[in-house]
Length: 300
Image (cartoon, rainbow, N blue to C red):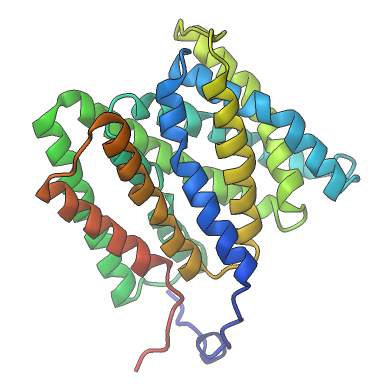
């Protein structure tokens, strides 16, 4: 493992744009409403993921062409990572939407966002560095918090435990998606990259929904339109904008808005209440997210 250079340790912290802070907070609030719309949809959960992408795709493509008209022509060798990213995102949404209907909204948002804990592990391997004490502590806290939450779900209902595992798997796939798209975004703007990877997500989600025998065509379009507009276009769009302007610390702290909003929605809409041990597990995971998302500070 290589030590961090003194130049890296003493880089000045850039100022945080206020508009980006507002964007990332609104993005997380919007994304937290996704599980509610999935539960409200009268299609299957994977079919709801298909409609989330399919209904949003024309808007995303139009926005991508507006921001970068030459994006399609410049794809070149990026088609393979875009395809891999799109397939990973499709599997992520499919698994997450299945989990949403089998666990609480709070747990769905917590485990579905575990990607933020996987990125440090990826970084340690890619950059050949050992984790700092703070980063190691964050991983331990996250592991304990996850065990507490899933342990409570197993006590309450095996159905909740299965939902937690689906959401946890979705979080891993979400990390794969972002690791793949990180390379794409070095040469392509975020919005065109999102639109073009979304193209690769649509048909796999439709094929999976049909293979599972789910109801594809809804009787009520409202929840699915809301899912596309609020979660995919507004939530994912604002998140991508914010990622280009905010530090990992700010983005990580903002991610904690999702479980908070998800728990509030679950309590108001379905009477889902957090018990004392659930609260302990959520706090441990939240603390881990905050620690692991912070910038590295100089050792004293």
